[in-house]
Length: 614
Ligand code: ADP
Image (cartoon, rainbow, N blue to C red):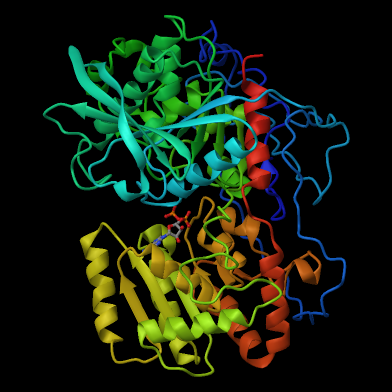
């Protein structure tokens, strides 16, 4: 029976992770070992909701002098081997579960595994990110922020980092410095011919970025938006191929290629099936999955387009065949099978996707490849998200000058024409996607207003029906001086909301990591979250937690229903109104957490070091 990771865990990387796969790209078939052993069908049980202990709210003492920020243990790849590998074997179409799978036990905060090797200096690496998004030039969601923040952290640590993106027509070109042609004529194999591409180079806030522009009548990236087209899978299958062709033709042989989500999950497939065979034997691939909901599922035409001309080989459940649609191929599954290491963006989500029924059909594949699978909580870029230096907010503040937050609250109210009163401001910022818990969000708006709070929402959706629904709500609440719904995407306004609000609501159905709660913590805006995915790994309930009082940083609820939400939001609002001193301490607790890229950057370097060719 798999163990559920506890909420204080920031990373889970199996101790033996990657070892068996670290060399598979060089010379041997990544799938071959799977074809030997046996698989056992097993039921995929959903984890039981973890009941919140019914404790009395604890009284916060004044801050002890020596409280240090929680610094969770870095992931240490070569820790004691707790992972027992049973090789699953047969096609993983039917749910298969290795006989004995253990999620690595979390290490106590701030400790290291006893047999962890002392820090060794390691060579600087050449790392290439191949990605569909990067903030701020091409941002749809958190993936864009992750590539922006992680690439900077890796570069600060002395590694050479390059990023390859499509050249979209709707990018924020004002954030690209010195854009110029780097590679004039790149011919990328596609169907029976090639597509002529031009590769540009430019700096995005010091990040070295290559942008691939295809010249074809399909106009893959000149469509005014990043996603939303019926040929999206083809578009990004092409981009992945073009990125690999560029590396090959430009004679780049990175130590690590880091790809992201289904859009670039074919990268390790191409590397193994094409480029390794013609001499690109050095790179190893890390795939990060930011969300399992979208997987890139397509029919056999993919094989004709990409040149993967062997249907029997690729329509194999051990390779790219979709676990549920027998006539379809699944790009994300291919990435999991072929990559040297697969991460997702929190340990809890790693558990939920493999063992908690959240893998959107990929559970058996994750079981088969569990030895190279783990979770690393995202960081946030404190150069961008930091109330001490934030250029978008009228008053800067820090943990020693929290009162500055209230100037921003005034500014937020002025900007949104809200009443100035004693009420707390509850906020929501995010995509208006069912994943984010839209029905609970709607309920929360009325609950908060009824209980004497103000509510601010900033969000949008590509789905017109959802947008229309929230426009209706906005019109209904238009007269209220305690409520403002902003339907749209506005980076600048988001900064003011993070700074000026008192609470940040994240009532998600599922949440791989979540950045809004991490940003909110930095701004002393108390997160009120559902205990799922990365939210469970980063927010610790004020009243119900095993952590010391000074490490509790928010309010948490378990069940996805109205009472659950009311339980958490009600307590947060009551604390704000009835115990202002306690609430102030809670703000300090929140601001003390370190969710920068410092630790996750180290985690990824450990993974890279583990899989790289030595
Ligand atoms: P996801 O990746 O599922 O969209 P995350 O919480 O990981 O969610 O990341 C969301 C990021 O996008 C955060 O930086 C958040 O501030 C930002 N964001 C989401 N919606 C908006 C919006 N409407 N306007 C401005 N920023 C937004």
